[in-house]
Image (cartoon, rainbow, N blue to C red):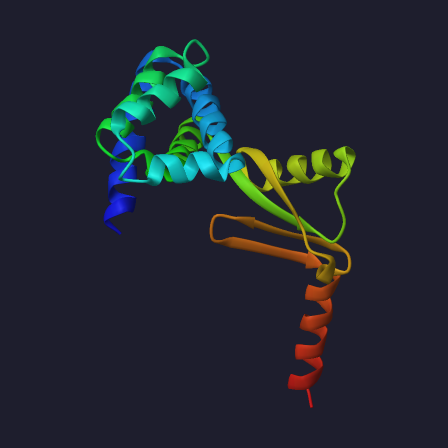
Length: 180
């Protein structure tokens, strides 16, 4: 719980800085890049999480990886996380930052689960329909679950829309059992 509170403070700080500078999208992309880099290389994630590794060595790795690649504020933010021994929180910080930036820009994230990969045309159609329903710009996060058999399940925040074949079969089964 404490780590989530700390991550929120850091993500709020970098969010406010980005908002002030008009760089919400740019900073979000850079934080996501660093997060993805860490997740792609488990050894790097373990290196930054290890308290026995000196801060100097961690800063040197950040410098080698990102010097000239990131905007100065994000680059310095990474050094701050190393100094405060909070670098392990970066994935959570990046995700919380994304949520704040999306809310500020009027964007909602829709988790869309289909039985098979959705084509570009299907993705666009789903996004357009969800934009009509929510009145906001919708960003899709795609998932696959063959157990759905067909159709789609959409989750936006705590709202769930089940248009899957499996969901319809379950609803039908429930209806038949309660009508006996």
